[in-house]
Picture 1 (cartoon, helix red, strand yellow):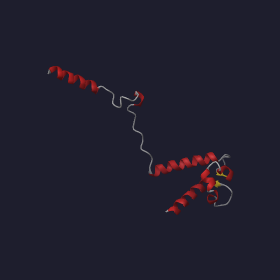
Picture 2: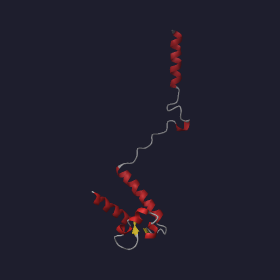
Picture 3: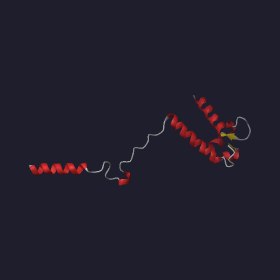
Picture 4: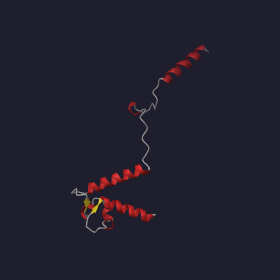
Length: 110
């Protein structure tokens, strides 16, 4: 009986020394901090707006802050809705005009 008791103590102390986490993972991946929660609400809208602006800037090849119909071909959504976005009928759309168009479209859907 005393041997069984000593064996139980030895097993208990050995398991207490194992690293916390999944032993099947490489050490570099163990105990990583939890991933941040996905964005929601205002943070999600800000991320979407930043991504939209980055796409707009990438399509603006001459870096003048607006897209011509030719440049808009690199940004399919703007190309498909160019006339509706270009309310001033100047032949180019700015990012602010794109945002205004999206706001109008959202309001119309409600």
